[in-house]
Length: 266
Image: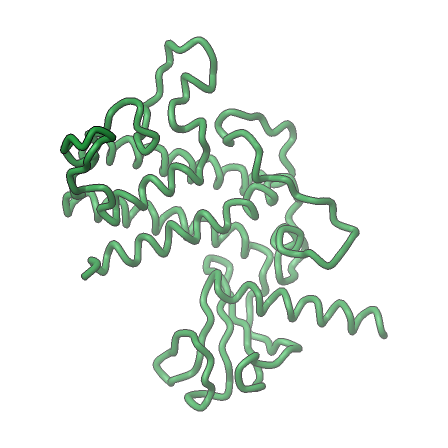
C-alpha cells in the first residue's frame, strides 16, 4: 500500500506541474483588480476567445536560464524563482541519497557543473526545467525503479535507485506543500475576500454554489444542497460537497464566462 505521505506529496507535485504554466503567464500579466478568476488564470485556461494571444510557455527555457525584463508581476516572479529553487535543490538532495544510475541513463538527475562551457550544460538537469525536476522527485517519492534490472545482454544490474528513506520522504512532503501553497496564493491573489454565490449552478445537482476565499488562502467552492448532492468531490463536516484548489478552477472559470455573457447582453 502506498504511504499516505507519498500519496499526498505526489498530488501536490501534480498540482505544481499543472499550475506552472499559469504561474509563468502571471509573471507577464499585471495583477488584476479584485475579480475572480485571476486574469492570468483566465488567459491560461481560456480557449474560446480570440482576444487573448496564445501563451506559448511549453517550449520556454527554464526560468533560471532566461531573463524577464520588466516583469509585470513581481510577486509571481518571486514565487516562480522560489519554487524552482526549492524543487531543484530537493532533486539534488534525493539524488545524492538514492541515485545509482549509469551516467548515460536518461532517468538520472545530473548536478550543476559551473565549469561547463555553456549555461545549459552547466545547469545539469535543471536545464530541462521545472516539469522534469518535479517528475524526478515524484519518481523518488513513489520508489520507482528500485528493483534490479536486466541490460540488453540479459545481465542483471543493480537497481537504479534505492527506496527513499522516511526522513527524505517527509522533506519532499514539506517542500511540495510549501511550493503548492505559494503558487495557490499567487494565482488566487485577486480572488474575492468574502463569500458569494456563483451565477452558475452545481454541475451535479443544480444547487447553488458558493465561493469562499481569504487573502492568504486559495478559494474553495461549496454546494449548498448538502449531503444530497452527488458530486464526485470531497465533503466538509456538514456533508456538503466542496471543491478545493485547484479542482475549483473549472467551476470558477465557467461562472466568470457566464457573468461576461450576462454583462454583454445587458
